[in-house]
Each structure stands twice: as C-alpha cells, then as structure tokens.
Image 1 (cartoon, rainbow, N blue to C red):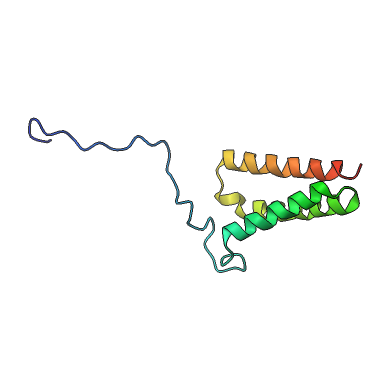
Image 2 (cartoon, helix red, strand yellow):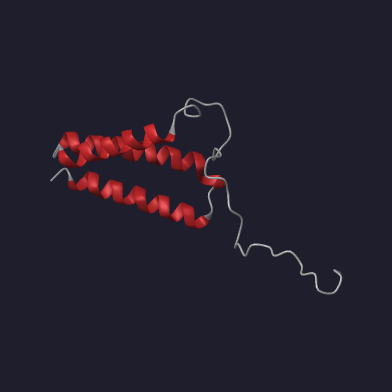
Length: 105
C-alpha cells in the first residue's frame, strides 16, 4: 500500500501483448533473414502490378508465382500466427489466386 495521497502508477490499458514489428517473426539465419523488408515490398508490388497489367497466361503466371511464394511463407509461419492473422493471410492468398485465374480470361 502507498501512503495516503500518493497514487499508484498507471499501467497502460493494452489488450493482449504487442510485439515489436521490427523483430523477426521467426528467428533464424535463413536466406531471407538479411533481406530488407522494403526491398521485398517493392518486388512484390512490382510483380503484382506486372501480373495485373499483363493479361493472359504470362500475367496469370506472375500472379501464380506470387501466390506460391505467399503460400510458402504462410505455411512456414503458420504455427506462430494468431487465428485472426491466419485468416487475413489466407484471405489475401485466396484473393490473389482469384485474380490470377481471372487473368486467364
């Protein structure tokens, strides 16, 4: 107990735990551990844009390649993701597959 007149220190009202966004999701020294996230983001945006703009088999192939990469990363990180994170990533993968299929038209 604190003496009269001295308030308890306030704790921040945070639901759940917050994780450091700069910390690696899965620790390790694999080939992707040294790749800068901004470089990966730029490459993914470039491949997606090219896949959407190039119609037909080539565009669908680029999007399918991107979907395979997303699927591999999802399978690798599945055990450390929370259920809502899993659902969002599966949704993104599903949308990517649908867009790839629509490119074949």
